Image (cartoon, rainbow, N blue to C red; front, side):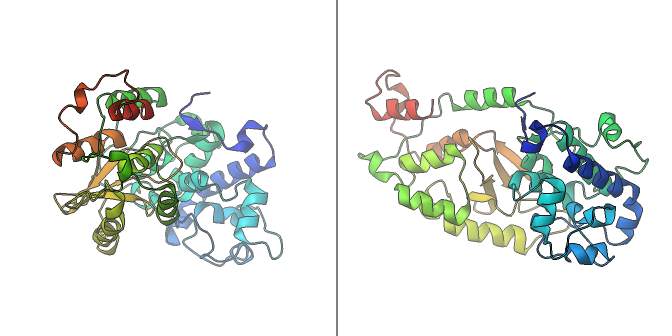
Length: 357
């Protein structure tokens, strides 16, 4: 199986009733798509606590429900006093796995594919392939996926594609980027790292690293940091970065406040989606928020939200070239850093090379 996917544990243990239940839910979403639209469409929220209880939904109450909350209406009744967490775990085998919930019902889908058919096909995709490694980027519309164009997935649901399956996708939005497999993506990121050797601009650079206890506090505040950004902060991320860059830890809180105010407080209907747990690390030209994706990831692309038109674009395939560009603009690396001997692992440059090899 391709390394493009992270597999839910159920998928590796043989087919059982929980997979059958997910197929039943997918079929329900498609066959009742018109009624779901008439009732206000699907809701998208990774936390189900704000919606009517499973028992209330089974009785016909509640609207704007996320995909998994349609289970009671798909013929999968809840037990007495069962909450949504217990229901989803028992009926679908889905607990609090963040990736699965993002793939199935992240708020990002409101702007990229809010259709009941799309939600059903993502269920079929999960059952057949597993969870894509770039599921957040796909939900943002920033990575390729064929979940909504694969006839095979309709066969998985034992259904034929309805003529209006794509009818709810926002008109005029950009097409998804071209497909890049994990192997090729990792190669490109590795290529981007070559030559990206950033150094602090003082005589005792390792004193500028963020202490481990401070890093733990940052992750408690912002969520897990991608390993590349985590290691940069650990190595040289404590100095004042200057301007409006959050490349250094002391700017993260200020950048986060400004970015969230600009993106979420003033959100426009046609703005591209931005994850609520995005980690904002800069303001391009002082006004366009730049962010990376939270989570236990080895690396993350860097995205920019254009404050003028609300478009999100990828500005760096990896954290490395983004930080390098920032430090070059600040004249941070010593002039002779690029000429340091590659094998001298006792030199600062050699240690950076070794750390980020």
